[in-house]
Amino acid sequence: MRRILLKLSGEALQGADGDPLDSAFLKTLALEIRAVRELGAQVAVVVGGGNIFRGATGAALGMERTSADQMGMLATVINSLALQAALEGCDVPTRVQSAIAMTQVAEPFVQREAVRHLEAGRVVIFAAGTGNPYFTTDTAASLRAAEIHADLLLKATKVDGVYDSDPKKNPDARKFTSLTYEEVLRRGLGVMDLTAITLCRDNRIPLCVFSILERGALEAILMGEPRGTTIGMD
Picture 1 (cartoon, rainbow, N blue to C red):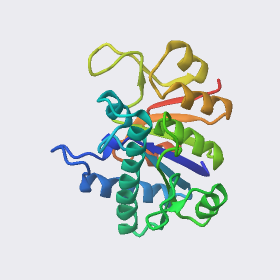
Picture 2 (picture 1 turned 30 degrees about the horizontal axis):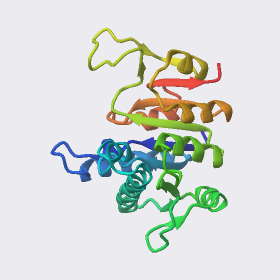
Picture 3 (picture 1 turned 30 degrees about the vertical axis):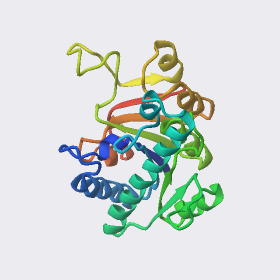
């Protein structure tokens, strides 16, 4: 895979003690990304903000949805800067590009500049989602993957793939090793939201859902070893 986009949830960065950011996990994640980069892959990242603030939660509490989603976008910027610090602490050159203009903190998102950074060997972290309310960071990941012409979209979760029901609640839940986008849509599997899945399907972007908690899984996937659940056109 020449160019990949890694989608991380904000919750993945959260410490077990409830702290928004787990510095040990960030260091481990940075080392995993460095290993993939050393294989020759160009790496982009989209990270959520749910460990700090989730727009849907704010809206449920009575906030105006647009404002709540904007707060959630700002939370992703905090996470992106934290990941940038961890990566650069491992000698990985990194750029953060934000969909919301904040030039003292991050570069504005410009597709051509993002591709140039990737071709120069830098990891590019896309912050602030799409820059618009009512869109999830899953949709932002699918959109950015299409814009940078990614060869693979990797969705990192705390579960080792896609199941036909919640494996935490159902011990008999069945894991899928592979699916098509049409099967995901027909079965109503909660892999990503509908917009994100449709974007991947329409742009023919392969998707792999895997556990970020498994050490070395990211590198194994790029080496062609089976991990998680793969989703494609057929």
